[in-house]
Image (cartoon, rainbow, N blue to C red; front, top):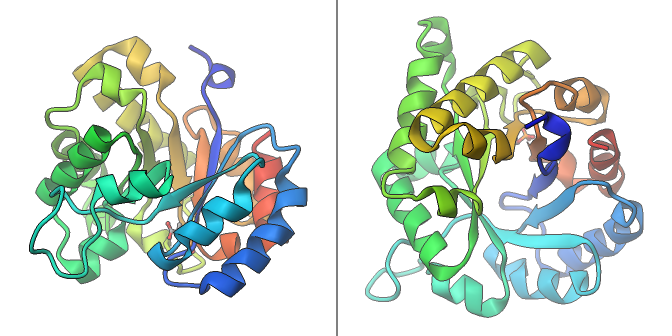
Length: 254
Ligand code: PEP
């Protein structure tokens, strides 16, 4: 399958930014700028903004995602949110395994797998994040790390379920730092992830899966990154908080 046949998807990760009022304003700014998008558009907003985002995006081409979910359906997990709760609210996507969750909140490949399976069971579409830290890149083990993260996160996931999953390659050293992986570096690792998918699920599944790059993507570098054969979209942090910048990246994906 050619790159052109895969779904290009630009997703914004708002992280812990914008309360409901600011979220409503940002979405109103974004809607007209994104309405002619030739790619999938997702905004992954804080839990408290989900209801606002779902209401504000109704009838538009913007899809709404959360930034995490718990693996249990319910129970004694103070402050956590289950996949079923998100689904009931009308949420469509959920980011899982983001490096900030791994780095600051003890997320492991095993818990990412548990969350991912819970998300699929609830009918959510996961955006699975994988990526190496700077030390691992310098040690020359990027491929091994990303292979391992991908394989563990996908334990127990079927080829049919893979149709619901987007993978985001996010080198940790490039997130929020202003340092972007070169387009060739991004393409190389996205290609390695596709190779893992081919081994696990076969060529056609690997070729059909959307693999995004994330890490300081902005209007100035989006076109080059998104032009690479294995880079099917972007997971955007900082630049997703400015409607004009996010829209420029969306248009670079066309
Ligand atoms: C992210 O948070 O997933 C991300 C890629 O952030 P930034 O674009 O700010 O590097």
